[in-house]
Image (cartoon, rainbow, N blue to C red):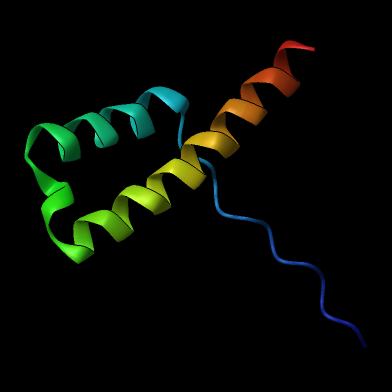
Length: 58
């Protein structure tokens, strides 16, 4: 019997992701390789949040 699809994790709001990006940048977090990786992850999450906002508005 197939297993039901799992629900994707709840996406964070655009404002929350944006705030985390700002905090990372203001703390100089892009200096380390880990900081750059986290920034890239946040950008992907931010883009998904933007797409979600556009979908809801339509």
